[in-house]
Length: 612
Picture 1 (cartoon, rainbow, N blue to C red):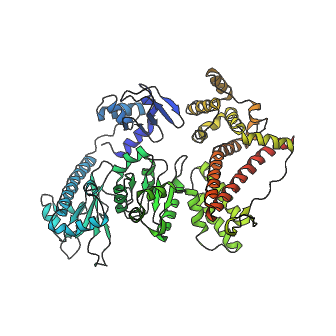
Picture 2 (cartoon, rainbow, N blue to C red):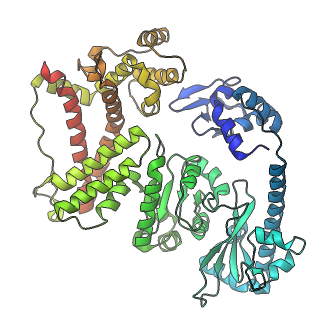
Picture 3 (cartoon, helix red, strand yellow):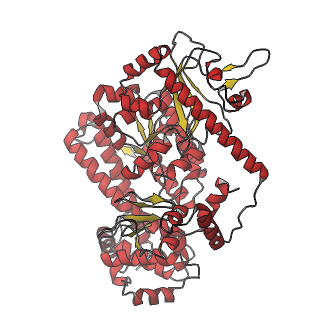
C-alpha cells in the first residue's frame, strides 16, 4: 500500500531538478531553475522548477506537477512504473501489500460514495419547495447562480430521517461513520444536519469528505449558527483547508493565497473575483494547515475581521507559525476595517476595497510587536520589562537559528526605540507629534568614516560578503538560501553568487583554492580588496573564531539594506502626500531602523579599520 507518507518520503529523496535536467536544459535563477517548456514550443523560458516546493510549473501552458507527474506526463510511464523507477533511484523498497490497509482503502472508497450521494441529495433538496428559505438566504447574500452551482450549495430538510431514507442503499453504520447520522443512548438515531443551508467540504483531489451547515431558523438560539461534520476516516478538520482544491491552482497563477475566517467568507471573495481564498474549519489555524499553505505559496495572506476576536485570532496564528518559520516562508496579516467581514467590505465599498486591504498586509514580526505592545498598559519600568520578556519568549520558540537571531534583533530594536529613545518635539511635526530622535552616533576616525561611506553607498559590502564566502566555503550550504535573496546590480557579482549557490549543493567538501579554480574556469568575478574599499572585516581575516557569525550578520545586513531604503522612501512619499500622524510615525520608525542599521555597519567597520 503506497501511503501518502511513503510517497512524500519518496519525493523528498529525489532532486526534481536533477530528474528534469536529464532531458531539459535548466538554468539556475535564484532559488529556482528556468527552461523553455518541454510541453509546448516557446522561444523564451516560462517553465520553472522549484526543488524546495517540489513542483514544476509552466506559466505559458499551465503544465504543473511533482516528480511523479513528470515521469508520467513527460516520460509516458504509468503511475506505478514511475514510482518503481524513482524508488530504485531513491534507494527505497516498495511497501509490501498490507491487507488491513487495502481493506481501509476500500472502506474509504465506500465512504466517498456515501458522501457523493449525500451531496447529490442536498443539492436536489435546495431546488424543492422545502428549500425555499435556503434559496431566499442565498439571494440576500447576493451570490450569483454560477457561484451557488460551483460551490455546491444544498439544503438539509428539517427531518430526523430524510437523509437516511434517501440513502437507503447504504448501511446505517456507514452513514454514522461518515458523520451524517448521530447515535445516542436511549434515543433513536437521527440525521446530523436538519433545516440548514449545506456546503460540501472537499479534499485536495476535489472529493466530498465532509459538510458544513448554516442554520436557517435564527429563532433557535440554542443551536450553533454553523455546524461542521465531525472528524471521520475521511475528514480531519485540523488538516483540511476549505476550498484548497479550487484555490491552489488560482494561487499559483497570482502568487497569492488568502486565508479568511469562515467558508462563507471564501464564497463571498470568489463571487467578487478573488478565487485564491481558503478557510480553516471551526478551529484556529493549525501547524499542519500552515505547512499546507506554504506548499502553495511562500507568504500566504491571513485576513481577519477587525474586531477583538479577529486580533486574538491573528495573534494565535502568529504564535503557531513562529516555530515553523524557515527562510523565505512567512505570513502577512491584514485586518479588515471597522469590525467588517469580507462580504461587508465588498458590499460597502466594492471588490477594489478588498484588494487594497489585501495589498496592505503587515509582516509577521510587525504583527507580533504590535500585539504584545498593545496587550497591556506600558507605564512603569516593570510594565516595559514585561513586554521585553514576552517578546523574547516568542523569539525562543523559533527553531531556525538565522531567523531566530534576526527576529531577536528586530524586536529588540523596536523595544529600545520604544522604551529608551528621547522624545523631542520638533518644529513642523504634524499636529504636535513628538517624534523620537535617534541619538547621534559616536565619532569615528576620518579614514574609517570614508571607507564606511564607500561601503554603504556602493557594492563594497556585497564584495566583502562574496569574498567572505570564498574564504570560508564551509558556510556556503548553511546560508545559500539567504545568499539567493541578494539582488546585485553588478552582473559580475550576480553571476558569481549564482555559481556559489550552485556549488554549495555539492556533497564533497569545499575549499577556497578549489573555489578559485572553478570561478576562474568560468571566468567569473572574484572580489579584490579594492572592491570593498580595503575594509578588514573579521570574517576576511584568517583564524577569526567569530568570523562565521559576523559573515552571517553581514549577509543579513546586505539583504536588509535595500528593503529598508525602499520602505523609508515609500514612507517619506506617503508622509509628503498625507501629512498625517500615522505616516510621520512610520517614517520616523523606518528612519530609526536605518540609523540602527548604519550604526551596526559602522561598528563592524570601526572594530577593524578604526584601529589603523
